[in-house]
Amino acid sequence: MEFSELIRTGQAQAELLRGPEAPPLRGTLCVTGHHLLLSPGPQATPDLWLLLLRSVDSIEKRVAGDCGTITLRCKDLRVLQLDIEGVEATLNIARSIEALSSLESVITSFPFFYRPKGLRLGDAWHFHPPERYYKRVARETNAWRLSEANEDFSLCPSYPRAVIVPRAVNDDALALTARFRQGGRFPVLSYHHAPSRTVLLRSSQPLIGPQKRRCAEDEALLRAVLAGSRPGARGFIVDTRSAQTAKQARMTGGGTEAKAAYPGWKRLHRPLERGRPLQESFVHLVEACGDLEQSMDHWLSRLAGCRWLAHVKEALSTACLAAQGMEREGACILVHGAEGTDSTLVVTSLAQLILDPSSRTMAGFQELVEREWIQAGHPFQLRCAHSAFSHARPKHEAPTFLLFLDCVWQLGRQFPLSLEFGEGMLLALFDHAYASPFGTFLCNSEQERCLCEVRTRTHSLWSGLNQLKEQRKLRNPLYVPNPLALWPSVEPQSLRLWQGLFLRWTRPPEPSEAAWEKVWQIVTDQEKTEGSQPTVSASELQL
Image (cartoon, rainbow, N blue to C red; front, side, top):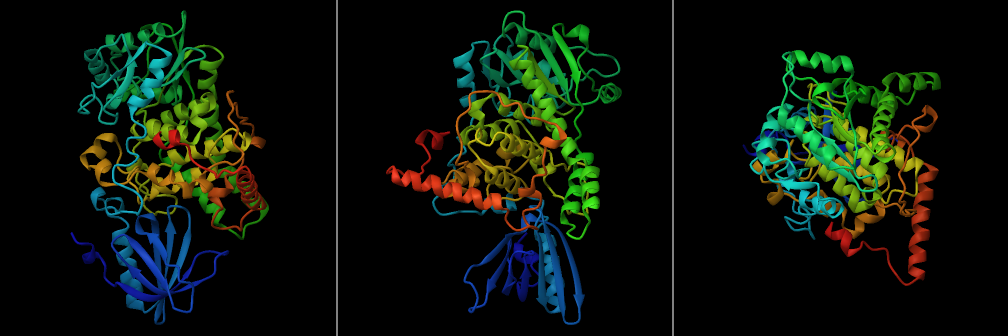
């Protein structure tokens, strides 16, 4: 298929309205295979306006007289209006955008055509391999090993080729354990907490079923976890479903670990919403944030009614529970829900941010996202197919990754000196997860990325973000390394709406943003005075 076959009208005269704070832009509108371009007239600014078509979430069109209007609602929550000369041109351009923004083939997406200056294919894809994190674990304990039993993705299609497992468990046992876990997601190491000699694991639910099946190899694996930890260690299984939901899952072949089969492990249920309820909460919040005419009472009622901050509270609370079990009780923690690819990853990644100072650095946070989300098999292509504006509501969509980013933003707001990265980093990750010129968030698993040759045919997002010119937008100028755990408050008065994301296109910059820029200027001037420029260390560029 040629892109030209989907472009009914290539260009037209149009005026672009970008929001209440941006002036209108008039010029020639052009449609390409991956972008919408607006080239201003010779009397206007020479800057070219560019929109990646993949970022369009929904499109509305209407005509009146001899002109028409197209409203584009984008995945990054922007709302754009195009006033176009000519009814036929309006309808043809709208149909072209609809077709080009919804192409399902991964290899026809823009990352496979993106070739920016200064970057080479293959750069940064090697930054965060599983082997790298294993070397860190191996320096702290010899109870774990790096297994390549999943080299051909036959054990688990959503796991990477290499995973960290107990040294006492051989690959044959792993294969049997994988058959006992949904989707083959057997328990693997997520984080080793050296101070308490405990570990954080993740998996999917066991396939107990109505017959109450057992798996000796699965039980032995969790015994080996406790044996490889501190003497007398115990474990907690944090199930992100309610007890009732877990019980009902047995009727369809799932379930949860039986107490008698896993001595030393205690099960805790901490239900976290996922799937459609989480997506609907996101949609209702965005709708409320986009209504600029509502009264204060109506706004507060809608903010409470969407329950987004309640989801943030529950996610942070569950992560704190897991972190406290390791830090204060010396317990090993296994986290899972049903599939183990959504709320499970929210909990394990947040728990590491709470406990591990290295994950709060710029390089460490990138590694955390790569290891705990991308390589761990979060299905980005399914979850981020649409944002908050699409009229289609497939059951696979959910803003799980956005929930994680919002929780990280809450941590950064409560501990403003403890994260090396700032809000700009979180916004960039949100934007790129939904639509990106880079290949990092493509597909649903490492297996799919290998089949599509993503690592050899596209650029890594980390290579783009680690360029020196990007650092000012992403780094926290006030960062001071903090070796202590971060225990966030989840009281209602402590959690805030993330205005920098949900209101960034509808309100003028806040005084705090101007102050942030002033802080950067002060830091830059001070470094110049000391005879140095802000740089990224060589070790960070290698991470």
